[in-house]
Every structure is written in structure tokens, then in C-alpha cells.
Amino acid sequence: MELWDAYNSEIYQKLLEQLSCEFNCKPQDFSLDREAENIVTLSVLNEGRRHFSNKPFFLQMASLGGNTVISADQKMHAWLNEWVKGENGIWLFEQHNFFDLECELRKYGYKMSMTHHMFLPKVEPTPEPLEINPDFEIRWLEQSDIMKFYGDERFPNAICDKFKPERPDVLAVVAVDNDRIMGMAGCSADTPLFWQIGIDVLPEYRGRGVAKTLVSLLKDEAFRRGAIPYYGTSLSNLGSWKTALASGFEPAWIETEARECL
Image (cartoon, rainbow, N blue to C red; front, side, top):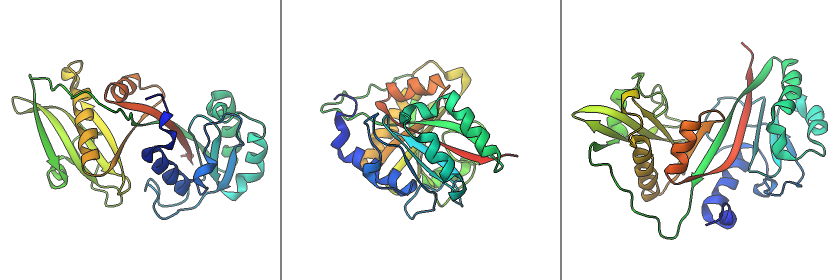
């Protein structure tokens, strides 16, 4: 299937509904048309959002490859409406534009955070069955099994640092070599429908297909449990990009937010 030939797919429509909830706009405000108008909205905490903050973001922005939608504090609106006017939405994420945005944010005690490059599963009519590497064992962890791993510094990406009831870790899968964990992939239920996958592989076991195997297995199991799995990484983490692509994900959207200066 061509990239976003799935534009009208159920998964894609659910994504638009989720993002419109978080960016306080309508689903149709997100466009794949690069000529579409950029949108500025008021930042609020809508019910149904992913719980990444207990207060509205001072500024957050997202694009699906066409225009950009920005939700922000009212103080920023006049400046933002001028900043986005006539601009191709995808280029607002480039460094030369971020510099101008950063300078404006600093006036209010904020600065830009990292960009999050987000992936959704590639929908294929007849996906090939996953070949499990025979030289390591697979073990599944349900929510109660995950609890003992909180605070384990080996798995900062696979699971949260502690139990978070607002977006709990609900499922994980580990690769095991003679009872030694090689790597772990975990799902946090960021919403009841959208489960985010994270992965950690111990350095001595990298290059053996552990990440691809675990992320692929977890993606398929999340689907079986009625969730939509998604995957996020940063601009410069090429290893994580390769894992996402090899595990049946495709780039879907980009998002970023401002944070307070320390």
C-alpha cells in the first residue's frame, strides 16, 4: 500500500481524531496538502488526550506532512499568526524557523523541546509471518509482571520510570538468553486505544535482530488486543528509525512542544 494510500483508513481517521483532541481543533484541520493553511488554536486540556502534561502546553505543534497545527497560550497567538502566514507547514519544523520561534518563546521563559517523529503500522493485505530468531527465547509480561522492572536502568525506553495510572504500561515482551534478558519492548496505554511502543536492547546483544523481533511481536499483539500501536523516536536516532521501519511501521506525523527554561 502506498504511503497514506491509507488516508481514509480507519487507523488514519482515529489518528486525526486523537490529534484534533490534543490540538483543540477539528480532524480536517490536519491536511496532507502542503498548500493548506496553517492553523493556530488555544492550548487546553481536552478529555481523551494523551497524558504527557498536567497543564496545557504553552506551545505544541504537529504536522502530517502538509500544513502545521499549533496550539498555544493566548499570549503567543498574534505572533504565531504572522509567523505561519504563507509558510509551507512542513518547513516550520526546520532550524531556521525554529530559531525565530525560540527567540519569541524565550520572552515568556520557554524554549523548544525535541521533535518527536511518530510512526503508525503499515497496513498490508497479506503481511508476511514474522520469523523468530531461534537462538533466543521469547517471554511475555502482563501489567502485573512489569511492576518489578520499574527503576531498572536497563529499560528507560521500553517502560516508564514508575507506574503511571494515566498511561500505564500494559504489556511487554522480552528476549532471553539463558535466563538473561537481552532486550525488552513495552507498550504504554497512552489512551485506551493508542498504545505506544518503546524498545531497549542491551549493548552486547545489539545487531542480532532483537529489536525488530520484539517490536514486531508487540505491534501484532497490541492489534490483537484491539489497540492501535504507535512508535516514536527523535530526529537523530537512526537506529530507532531503522527498527520502526523494519518492524512494519511507517512515518505518520511529527510533533514537538515547548518547555520551561530551567
